[in-house]
Length: 212
Image 1 (tube, helix red, strand yellow):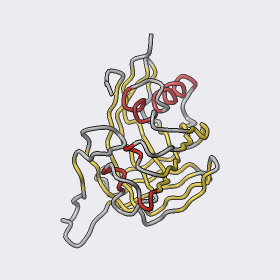
Image 2: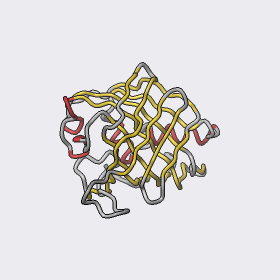
Image 3: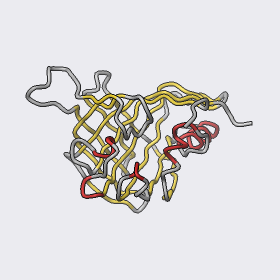
Image 4: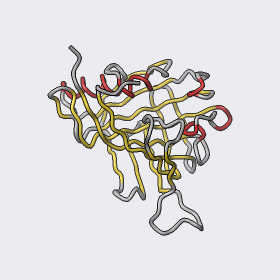
C-alpha cells in the first residue's frame, strides 16, 4: 500500500524569461527557450510516519517551447537536501520526483529527461514579507530575487497574480513576482547565468489525496 503523504511550504524559481515569465501564464518562454532554478522548501509535511519539515529540494531545468501546450521536452536535474536521513531521502525523492502522485506526479509527467539526482547541502532563505528569497547549492546553483516593485507600487506591497493559468505548483495559488539578483547554474551538464530576469514565489500544499 502506498504511503500517505502531505507537504506544505514555499516554492520559487529564477529563470531566463524576462519579467514576467510567460510560462506562468501558459505562454511560450522568451525566444521560445527557458532555463532556470526551481526551489522547494517544506515547512511542514510527512511521508507516512517520516517527518519532512525543514528540508529542501532544488531542481535545475531547461526546455524549448510552451511546456503547457505539450511542445517542450524538459530536461531536469535534482538536488535533495543532504541533511535528510535515509527515510527522509526516500520520501522527498518519491514525492518531488513524481512517484507518489498528486500534483508533483502531474508536473513530473511533463519532464522528458532526468539528468540525475544528487544529495547536497542546500541553503534556502525567504523573508516573511516576501521581500527577498534565495537558494544555494554550493558550487552548483545559486539563485536569489527581490520582490518586484515600481513607481506606483505602494510601500511594502507585493505584485501578485491570482489563479495564473500556468502555475508550476498547481491550481489556485497566488504568484508573487520578483526580479532575479542571481541565477547561476553549473550542474548536470547545464551551465547558464541569467541575473536581472524573472522570478516568482508560490506557496504550495499537496497531499496523496489530491487528484490531478
